[in-house]
Each structure stands twice: as structure tokens, then as C-alpha cells.
Image 1 (spheres, helix red, strand yellow):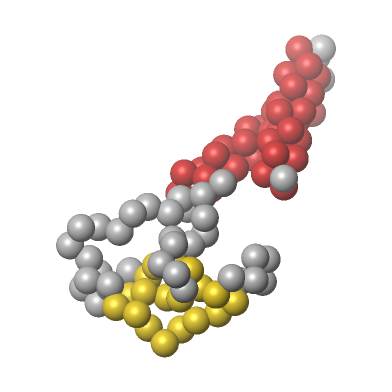
Image 2: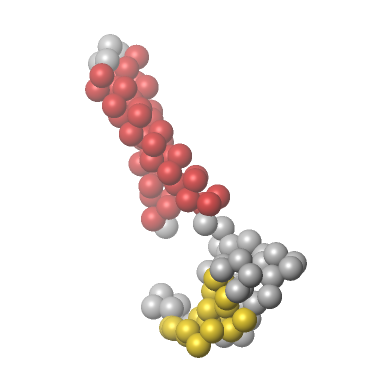
Length: 102
């Protein structure tokens, strides 16, 4: 929901920047256009960068003693650790990757 609202705001900033710039507003239009583009790219980068990928085939995952309850869903989440790469993964106590994909 927040992501959708931010996408709408980014599009409105871009449209307002183009309109103001086209009407001769100069720097004000450029500022709104730039702010909208930065917000849009940030939202798209976040989705690409922080997606939950399947673990590599050669990973040797070990359970740690770390467990916590996710405050939003109330589900128990465990931490897995690969000593070879140092990577950490979060999975629900039943083995489902965390966070779940929308």
C-alpha cells in the first residue's frame, strides 16, 4: 500500500515537473521532475535489490539459535547461516522463505 502511494506521488511529481518546465517555470519544474525521478528509481531499485532469491545450490545452511516473532504477521521466523559465504537467510519456522512474496 505504501509502495503504491509512493509510486503515485512519484508519477505526480514527474508530471508536475514536466508541465511546469514546459510552461517556462525553469528550475522549479526541473526540481519537481528530478525529485519524482529519484523517488521512482528508489522504489524500483528497492524491489529489485531486496528480493528474496533461492539459496545457492552449494550453500550449507545451518540453523542458528536466533528466532523471533514477526511483529506484522505474528509468525515465528528462524535464521539460517552459511558459514562458507557468511550469508544469512530468514525462514518461517515451517521452512517457508521470509518475507513472503506479494
